Length: 235
Image (cartoon, rainbow, N blue to C red):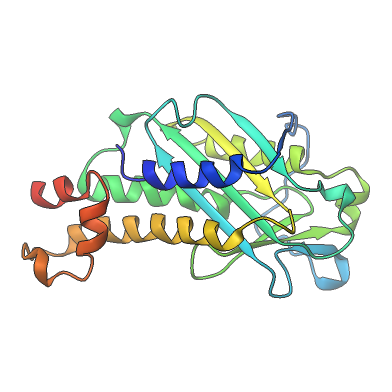
């Protein structure tokens, strides 16, 4: 499955243009809370992607081991204990899956969405994600008390990678957080929008029997992404 590989390569080029550092996968003992946990403004230290700042989140799926060879966690910018106020934020997860488990047609679409929705089933203490209806807009409230107890991206990120691995399709996850002021968040937003357009095109193909590509509003996406036209005409 190569549907998102070009978008992944664009994201990787953006991320590799900045100096990042690898974080340990050591969050197994950090507590999780229920899905009803709320961090009110009075209880938060700051917000990642708050007050109109860039706040990008995306999950990109591949079967190519070269794009996601093993689990890894990377940070570009200051870690949570070193942040004093609201900062821009991005979360990029490249998820490698077993190609034999993704299925076709509606099963494929549902499998992709299930991986994206991992972020709705991820509740580390003091790390409250806020996702907008645009799907790739994502901010995080950081709790004061959790920060005082040692919350950092290594703990939160390790928890998220563990959450992805609850899905039996997942073989590896490369998770990157960005908090740099100088990062090109707009370019990353374009990558996220491109990936969402691909997913919407898959859904469109499944729901529409129209075979006249010239009459389709998603023709450009279908022409540019390897695998979409094959999916279309296989219908």
